[in-house]
Image 1 (cartoon, rainbow, N blue to C red):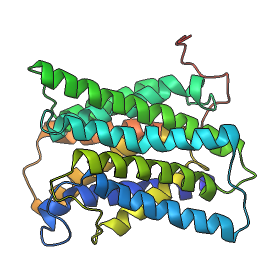
Image 2 (cartoon, rainbow, N blue to C red):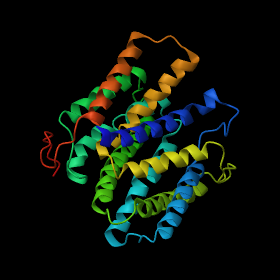
Image 3 (spheres, rainbow, N blue to C red):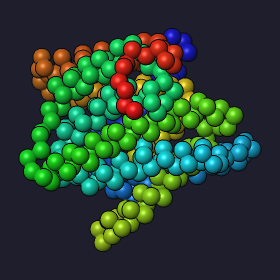
Image 4 (cartoon, rainbow, N blue to C red):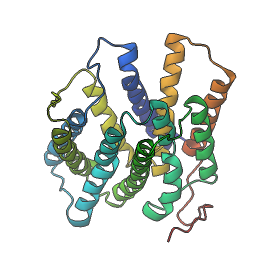
Length: 302
């Protein structure tokens, strides 16, 4: 348990930073930007992480990965950051925030299914059931809306594609970080974050031209950078399935912050949602991971 205390603490800090950022326009309207982040804006913290990690790699005289590892780093950058951000931007206006949160709670479910095929092959007993319990709790807190038109259905498909992309690349990233221990994670982070920043900046410049969108920083850029640093660090010391619980914990923390500050009436349904998310994520985080080949999940995707 002691060996997992630091990674779990890092994960909770990452989720707290995400939760605070998601609430900043409501709770702290005078701090930072009052508009939703653009693609170009999302490229800024990624570029800062890429530059800092690159300098750190050179300062420590570590080598940058080449060949297959270089391609994997780019794949992770595009699949975990760039593609989901673009898909969410395209779906913006056609899907509600609560529906988006509900759909993203499926990331751990897909991670459980894909981990034996794309990751290190580990998992813990009852992982799929625990992930589904947490999803059920999320649905109690964030009711989702079914698509009412072809445009809504396309938005749903785009968000689900983003969910699968994040789950898959999370598995690949953790496996790559574990296999390539000789190099520093900073080199991997520099390539992954840099590739995502370039793509988001380029696509943002194309889609957001004429809107006045520019690459800018505000007070919330630093927490985003810290969250990204924590995310890459967690790849070296936490399983892919456990890492994806960030999509369950962050909305839970955001709700708890709202309850503590705004003091709304909390229904029995809400408390049930809190408990189910806590139970599901707790199992995924605390139950020891099984060795490769010992997973009880028997889904043949070949």
